[in-house]
Image 1 (tube, one colour):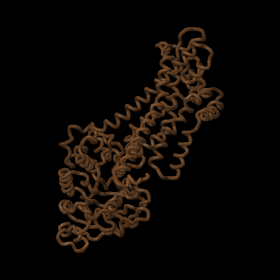
Image 2 (cartoon, chains in turn cyan, green):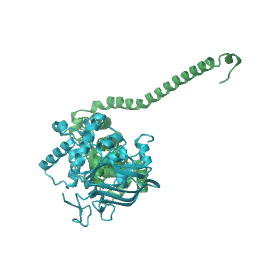
Image 3 (tube, each protein chain N blue to C red):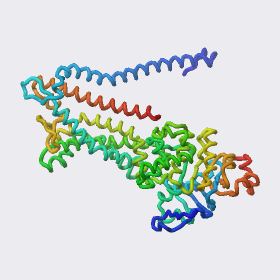
Image 4 (cartoon, rainbow over the protein chains, first blue to last red):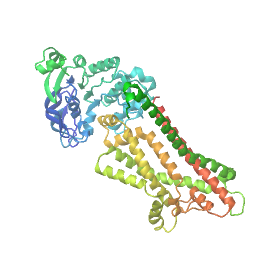
Length: 273
Length: 298
């Protein structure tokens, strides 16, 4: 699959290529909130079309690291970063990169479901689509994409008869899959999931996990999770963080059977965190 | 608490029992006092309503809403022009006050903590405490004098300016209740900040803002002082925005200070209509609030 991708405003055809080995690459990345440093000197390659899980104890900077990948980190007052992040070879913190354009390629789903309460189920899924296409899509095109996204998020059968109902009237697990559908509707290249099952019941969590497993066929997924079983189940690679630093990154199977760093072993065998 | 020798035999029970009885006594007294205070607080409203009904209901008829004022000495007549005038003034006031108030409130909530936001919030509170007669003088200076005549526009602008701080502060409060997570969700979808604020945040807070707006409208509906030398009042039928226009509070004022008994009766009836208008707006506001809190699902 070779598709030209550009997040730069000034070079519309300058190229990263979809399908290149690395979807995202962080180089000597530091992230701060005011004087507090949440991410320390992280360098990391995230291979395309793989699921990468980021694990580590609370407050280790996993979510912050994730939020530097779509420049959501900087939306918090006093937050800043140093270092670089490359998306298909392009520095996303470059002067000519518009974060809004970047976020159209790098989607994100949060810990708690965040359906827009004033919109119907259909309009929620179409929300990002509308903004990104400049409101130019006609009704039929929107309907098609909404259906595809809801099917991908394994929610279509549950909501197809009430697409016009309020999005706050469905269960928490359905709302979270709705948020995933909303992110998928715009066909992002990378999907960032910030503890997507933390507020869900086990059955809903399982559905989301199955979904993540399917998504790797078409996109790169980065999932932050507290749940090590979940990381082991859904991911191809696992990244272990501690106190803002990247301790170890390895294929998931290796990480969970033969971790090379004693701190990783201590964490995954449950001796702390 | 003083412990006597007898008390020491029962260090636990005696002093504690008497202390409890005393606390209960104090509690009963305080509850009674606050009940009385609460009763006194609502008594004026009830007395006013009852008195208005007694004095005003007699002069109230369909005619009152549909006819024009009659010259002194003639029977009957109504305040159709003043009722329409008040509604038009409220319309102009809303056109002036709502966009500015809602916009300012949105700014205060979305840019909270910045120095400019804190300054604007402080100034809005000062504006809220500004005597309404001062607002009237101000409007006269800038909207009446330069044009050489009183006008509905000047009156509407004066009470519209009084709405601004009210609408600003409720909008700010309501927008602040919108969870940060919704803003983040919109930004992460590629919404520009301005679209996030207008299409996600403002829409989510809209129910509360509508309530606040209605409360502000009800609040300025009875303002008289800012209209005295702006809208001025008019004994004839006029819907011309450039001309002086009648308004219920002004008409009540004019009739009440007149020496004629039938005008006094008309003033009472006008007051009754005005308070009914405010009451209806307040009820709609409550209804909107309830619909918002109860109607989240389906």
